[in-house]
Amino acid sequence: MKTLKYDEFLFESMKNEDVIIAYVNGATKASSKHLYIEKASKDTYGLKNYGTWLLYKTKEGDWLLNTKKYSVTTSKIQNYIKRNLTGINYIETDDEGIKTAIDIDYKV
Image (tube, rainbow, N blue to C red; front, top):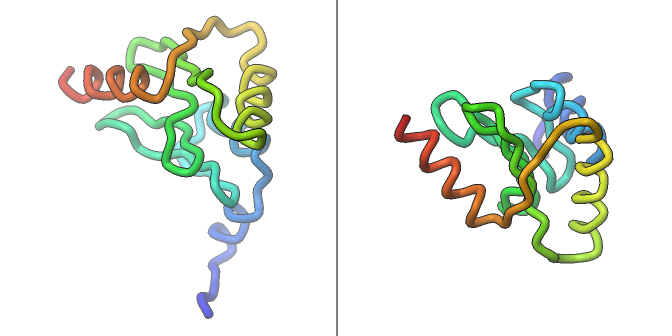
């Protein structure tokens, strides 16, 4: 059985909405069971669920939200994200659109 350090326990016990709030507010490390912040390029991070990019802030400061329909649970997470982006302009895209933006940021 793996023994968790305090900070690992803190991050692994977060709820999905806590992870979203952390990311929107600039955190580079946070996770729940399947939702987590991951390094996307040299200077950027994104929000992933089960390996699918859901939210990404580009180097230029543009927010990209994956609005493609997946499961009921992912739809709930996408709605949490929208609520936490209130007042922030974002571009609706899909996982491939976010991957393209990451590739562009990586090359810059």
